[in-house]
Length: 354
Image (tube, rainbow, N blue to C red; front, side):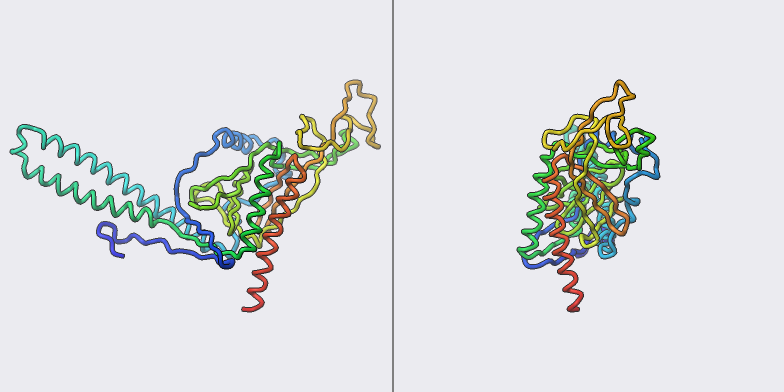
């Protein structure tokens, strides 16, 4: 295609990831997202005034270094699409402003009683306005083409497995409490007179169906907010770790390890309604776990059972979340693990028959 006004513009190519017959089509595009300002402010404060030693932090490697090798080319296409979109949008804003200014001047001359004196200037403004209109139409088309179209084909079995993830995620959103574990350190249980073997720093977060500025999709992403790093967005084809439209990583599910464990937690706050209290301990304890009677103000503390979800990759992803509803955590982990296992099996078969 030849362009009249911007000959250097390149249409973004399409990308196809194939998992079978039935397609899930996704378009990559730059648009705007409304951030949760309260969460972003809390996240910044957490990063500026870390309530723990750096050595004890549970955190992924820097965003920009986590992308799976198999998805690096796709990431480069997304970055190129973002640059093309921004340049085109900037030019479009400029041309719209010029058209508005030209139209205003033209109306002033055409409505004056001395317009016969300005026939040449009026014609010039008409010509300029027509050219600007033509260029704006072209820029609007280029803006639409500043995308990377991604088509994901999947067999019914993969569609069903991903649908299981969606159902499990919806249940997980109903968990009364959701936390991001951001640090963990071993306690000196004798010196501290505590029954807790570890001290954990946790921040309450939300999970939700969401969308990204770099993606326009028929499928909403499953979003886990992250207090000390990029948020996690689960799409059918891959996981995105996202900080901004120029700072993100794409992770192949075959590189992702997920693990769920029951976590006993000495709960100093209110125990959520959907959590089970499995035991009690004391604020100060003896070596055998019994109440230390030397402290007159010693009080009993419930031990709650939560679900802990850990997600890691060899490339540096390291995130730990905790949910008050153990069953929902286990169901989500099971659904995600089944999906990952199926894709890994398919990839292994493809390699074997190449």
